[in-house]
Image 1 (tube, one colour):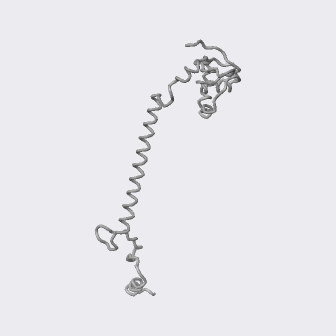
Image 2 (spheres, helix red, strand yellow):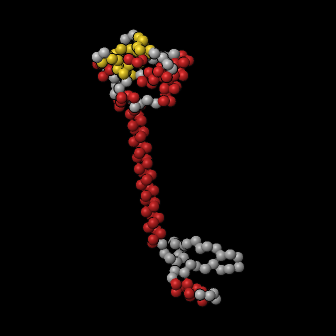
Image 3 (spheres, one colour):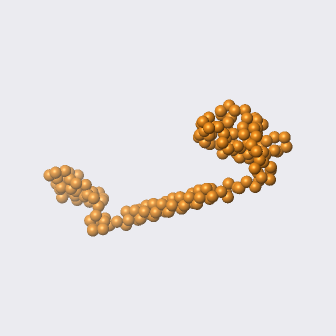
Length: 171
């Protein structure tokens, strides 16, 4: 492994794709750690013509910038070593996360299907429920105030008139 050396921070180019992966909370945690115990792990850079390109250590680099440092410890790796770095998708923690997300997606789909099924059953049973007071389709009838009998809601104007005649009410 190459020996760590000091590189000027302003000479290190960070590819746009890596810049998108910056997590401010991680940068803050690393900056605090650097204040307490210093930089423990060097970054990796490679030469691309006359410039240095960051290979690994984005959050360490950003933490050093945030602390006002002008240099950072790093190792110079060859382009071949930089390309042979394990792909993100090959790392075991990424595979575990992918499996977890697939499982969560499956559970969400099953839950949505169950909810849709229940909603369909409710709407079907509501439209097919008998209108009378049979054992299957008993509807809650509002309770009458004390001293009065509960009246069922009339289904048509003629039912309402019949109900009013029977109870001695006006219509």
